Length: 193
Image (cartoon, rainbow, N blue to C red):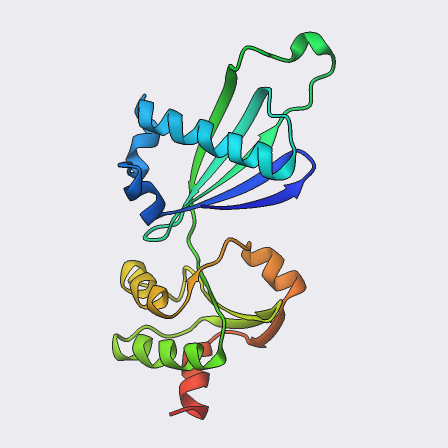
């Protein structure tokens, strides 16, 4: 589980499929009234509260983005109360949940050699395309929805060399340096055989 503070009252939590599996949960459990899921949610809120020194009381909005074979991202927004009467100090948290699917696969790699290796593996199973970025001393390979027919297979291969990124593709496009736009796998194979 990784935490990232987005704004003063918004926190992003990334849970891998392994994180869920270790706790005996699946993505489908979110729709059930599962005590395990409720416990996990409260544990996440407690950890976020401690790490970012945020008092999470009252109403929170939760957006959940399912990342196919990678896990899920939760965006938690803490509503700012207008006066003290609106805060609920009894530990009760009102939660609104929206579930959305993510069409893109975005993986982070530490070395360029990993990008070359993963490109070779992807090409062997006829998966091509993607865009390559560089930001904060890491490489990012973005496989968008139009280019990836078999997402689970691509996610498995990408996971062998890198790890799912919690950075939004929009943040990457805005602040990252585009090395290869579109056809990254093909371009890398052309120069590094």
